[in-house]
Length: 176
Ligand SMILES: Nc1nc2c(ncn2[C@@H]2O[C@H](COP(=O)(O)OP(=O)(O)OP(=O)(O)O)[C@@H](O)[C@H]2O)c(=O)[nH]1
Ligand SMILES: [Mg+2]
Image (cartoon, rainbow, N blue to C red; front, side, top):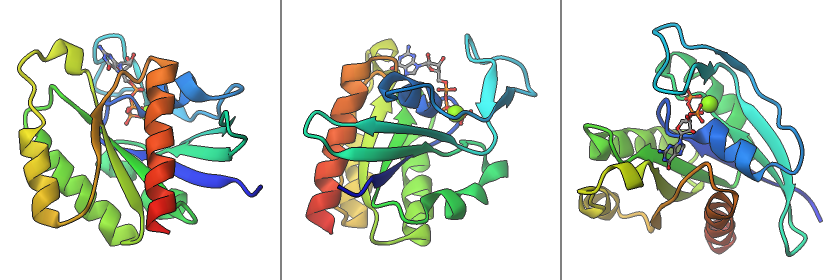
């Protein structure tokens, strides 16, 4: 079976590198450098090129999973990393001050790269935001007219991260 390529995207600190570490079958390829503006809690590094890991799902599907850098500074990596991908897990932080704006920005950037990409949205850090609501995100998705599922998950938890990967694979297969 040919490997399927999936990409994790989203702003700095949402947990793209963490999610890839959670689901990887072996040590992932990382390109981490120290955060120049200082640590964000226990996060002291940022991705400067990409993350990469291979996974074989329970049903035998081989996956190549890449993570993008969150910093706009490295936006040029998107075209390179997204080449050949069939789906993107767009990760957003429940605690972001303008999560709907970030969602719209990233969905626009992804659509610009490849309008055919299947997208699933995964919200992290939700347990730290008791008043978090999916409603503003649902409004963005509805406005754009794209059928995009939205889930909350913890990128540090392997099973939760794998659940999102399986959902993305399903969306990709429906879309293609
Ligand atoms: N509390 C909490 N922490 C989380 C959750 N998901 C991820 N984290 C933490 O959030 C941080 C995410 O850091 P990274 O994985 O480096 O983030 P990234 O998206 O790769 O960031 P860049 O590469 O800088 O764009 C880590 O410290 C994780 O342990 C979550 O659901 N809840
Ligand atoms: Mg990273």
